[in-house]
Image (cartoon, rainbow, N blue to C red; front, side):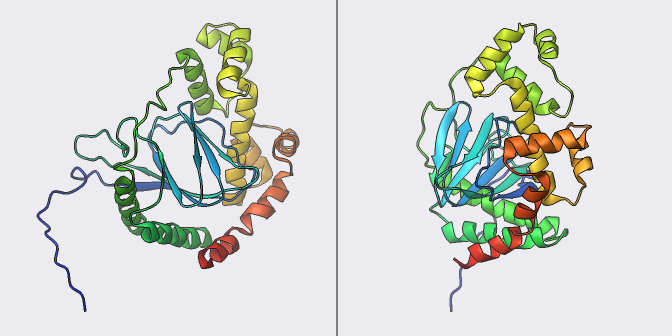
Length: 296
């Protein structure tokens, strides 16, 4: 028999009323996944690499995460995620909001300039079990757990991530200064990708020539502004295809295409399969794959 008593008068880890809450939970098992650069203004992401290798670009710095690594992407950080071609990654992602450690900014989990990728150590089995549990329960029903239960998991994960990152090494990575105008353009495209956007519109809005915008944007993000918009739309279409029963026409309209045939052709060209085939491959097998992974 074992007993341990706790002192409940100790100072709490979070500011009063500022504890973590779930906003999204994502399992990504697409071996060709590329998110493209994007920003979350009000969410901090806690990511667990279940298997394989994932590459993260966070504020212009490249980080490589392997199996059993954890990653933090704090709110407001420009970032992109790519699954390794040779060792495809499966990742679990909890997007949280509403928490604050005493003396820190809201949704801040990392100390300034610390590395956002570490190998999972403290509480390893607890973290893995929580992600596996969420990964098995949430996809199987629309209700899953109540929000209170999910928020309890969010609290535990945030504390354990904090403990793992508390002594992470610091570096100047992530502080590379970039062209502010080009960053502003990316943020604008990220927030308005559903709208009809042309290079001439960007030129007028940001008071820069089309050639300058195209050259500097491609130089910084390795993709043209228009192709970035397409990539952003395809990413959202993938989420909709695998997480909703919406028709192709509805998804096409939701991501910015009035013509469903044009959307389907672009999806095939950029993803490598039709929207219907993508839905069959990554929606129907998800729960089965999660159950198999939990037994490994």
